[in-house]
Length: 409
Image 1 (cartoon, rainbow, N blue to C red):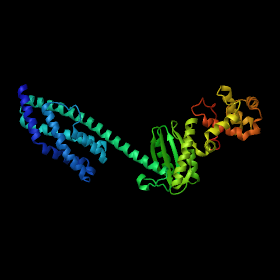
Image 2 (cartoon, rainbow, N blue to C red; image 1 turned 135 degrees about the vertical axis):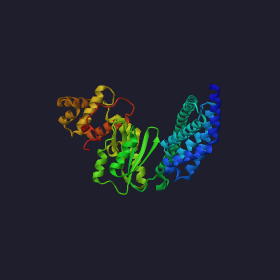
Image 3 (tube, rainbow, N blue to C red; image 1 turned 90 degrees about the vertical axis):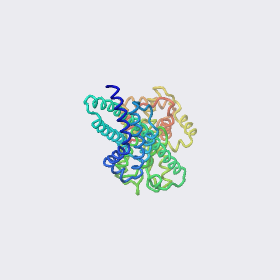
Image 4 (cartoon, rainbow, N blue to C red; image 1 turned 60 degrees about the vertical axis):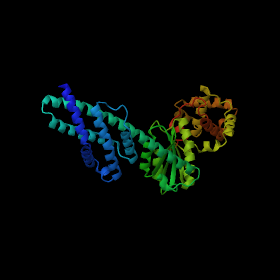
């Protein structure tokens, strides 16, 4: 019985292969019903699919006869999956092609077995043998196709994104780039953003929708996104308030430039956003507008001079021990509270008398009253915080009322 079944199996697989053209025609007809937007409106896809099916289904029938599953994705199936990715065919449509191919072959096999085998035991043996193989083959080929499709799509996306990055860099370097190349108009009114963390693209897309602005975003560096919000006109007062009140995800760090117009504004707001982003990362603040760090930007144009200025003005307070950090934080809070010890104490969560004692200790260290060189001392404190990136522990945490960026927002 077993040898007879094997002979019948070989006979039926040969008959199945002889019907290959009919099987493919049936497959294409079903595919047109399932994917009319691709098979009827895109002749290139329909013809590519038909030719690919002749090879793919033919190979499956031959594998069925031999009883061997492929160890690797056959070249024609791999190229078909990659071609679908290049044409923009959705992944679910690629998977559907293999499911339909499996279905039409299985139905043909059922009809052949019904016509050829009269005994129930023989039919069951032929059906079970083919069923086990065809289902395993379809599952394996579906996985192969998904892998090939995904790899090709990622390669295409990387290529497109790299092209967009090149165009953006051209704009930043002053070269002309047409609005159609990026889907964004360099002549718009812009707000530049530089961001890191997750989920940045989703957050910035939400912000652009909130403000009814066009969004240009590229991943220009491994850990940073460059973005611009563009519009025909400057943001009005309500939109500007909404922009400043925007709170990105806790893990994100965003620097925001000033509003600026035209190609030169595209460049200037980006440079401001990049500087503000550095401050956001150092301070672990989700959003830092440039106007909160404009003083630091001006002073840090010559970083060596800025460091010398900080060292001179904070002589006696420059060390990174706990006491020095506490004294610097107290002076900053005192300035931000308008020279009001009670306000500084409330901001720091300490007693007013403690503030007075710390200010006295500061004056002893620097050699003059705090109020005597208030401007220089306040600037030196802000610059020290900005320049201290990675050079030591941060200053003691301060409340929102003691922050130069969020105060008054």
